[in-house]
Length: 63
Length: 409
Image (cartoon, rainbow over the protein chains, first blue to last red):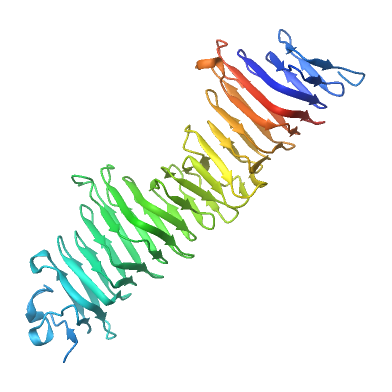
C-alpha cells in the first residue's frame, strides 16, 4: 500500500488468503509457481499485480 | 606483643598522626587498626602520610558513626584481615585508593564525590543494604572525572548508585571494572539516577538483580558479555540503556520493563526463549540502525513478539538458531535490509510491515526483508510506501520454499 513506489515479493507464493494490491506489486517468480487457485487477488484501480516469470496457477476458487 | 591499635582521635583526624592511636603507634602491615566506640568519628587517610599499610581494619561492636575519608592521593593498603565497613558508617573516597591482598566488604555507605577519581584494587563486595554512590555534577572536570575504578570483578548485593547532581549535563558518573565480572546478585540494584548527565559502567556485567535506568546508562562492553538473561532491566520513559559493543545475552529470565529504550550491542545471544511483551521497552538490536545479529546456542530458540508489541528490525539478522514468532508488529524501515535465517511465522492479527520512502538508496531497495525459508502468513504482510515520488521499493525475498498466505492471511 501507499501512493507511489513499488513493491516486490521474490519467491514462491501459495495464496489461500488475500493479496490486496493498493499499489503495484511484482511477484519475482522465476522457475517457481505463483498459485492463487484458492485465494483472492484484489487489485485497485490503476494498479497492477505482475508475475514476472515462472507459472501462474488459477482455478475455480480463485477470485 | 600488641597487634591491635585503637583509634582515639585525640589529636586530629589524620590516620598518619601517631597521637591518634593507642600507644602513639600507627598500625603497621602486621597489625590491626581498631576503630570502635560511640559517637561520631572522622578518620582521614591522606597523601601526606604515605601509604597506610595494615593487616586489617576492625570496626568494633560498640557502635558509633565512623566516617572514613580517603582523600586525594591517600592510600590504604589492606592485608589479609581486610576491612568491613559497618552499616552505621560511611566512607568517602575523594581521589583515594584501597589496595592490598585483603577484601573490603561494604555494609555501609561509600561515596565517590563528583570531580574525583578513586580506585579499589583490593577485593570488594557490596553487601545487602549497602550502597556505593558515584556522583557527578555540573562543575566538571578535565577528563570528566567522576570515576571509581575497581581492579577485579566483584559482587553487588546492595546498591550501586550512579547519581547525577547536575542540572546541565556536564558530568558522567563512571564505574570501571578493569577485569573480571561485576555480578549484580539477586536483590542487587544498579541504578543510574538524576535528571541530566550520563552514567557509564565499563566492564563485564552479569545481572541477576535489577538495573534501574532512571537516567541513561551506557555499558562499555567491548569484547565482553553483558548478561541479563536472569535479571531485570527497568528503563524510565525518555531514558536508554545502551550496550556499546560485545555481546548482549537475553533469555527467558530477562525481565524488561519501562517505556524507555534498550539499545543492545551488535551481537545478541539468546540463552533461551525470549518474549517481547507490550510492556517491554523499545528494543533496538544494535541501536537504532546499526547492523546486529541475534543468535542462540540452541537451535529452535524462539524470539516472540507478543500482541501489542512492535519490534523494529533495521539492518538486523535473526540467526539460524532463532525462530521469529510474530504475534504483534514487526517493522522493516525504509532504507534498511534485514534477514531472517530460520523459521518465521506471522500469526492471526499480526503484521510485518516493509516500508519504502523517497529517500532511497543504492540498488533501489528500500526496506528489504529476506527470509531464508518459506513460511506461513496468517496475519498481514504489508509492503508500504511512505514516498511521494516513486523512488523506493518495498521488497520481500523468500530464498527457498513457499510463502503460504493462509486463509485469512
